[in-house]
Length: 100
Image 1: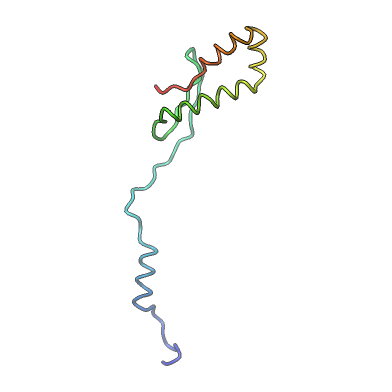
Image 2: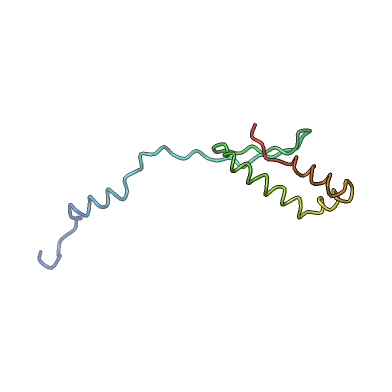
């Protein structure tokens, strides 16, 4: 049985490595996530999503990105044309991400 002939079984050290690689994690399984849900009503646009609540810094960042998006849209041009630049700016500041 020299030269590796007849060695059918894995060595003890190799089995430890295999078991270590295939051992299941002690963490609970990740629950399935649902897609976010959005809707509009008299209070504005709403978003419901799974996960932890955003921090105040994240809410501020969302507000800035939303306002930037409005400024780049045709809606901003219409707001300025309808209300004037100053009033449009005031209205834009009301577009904020809030946590309820």
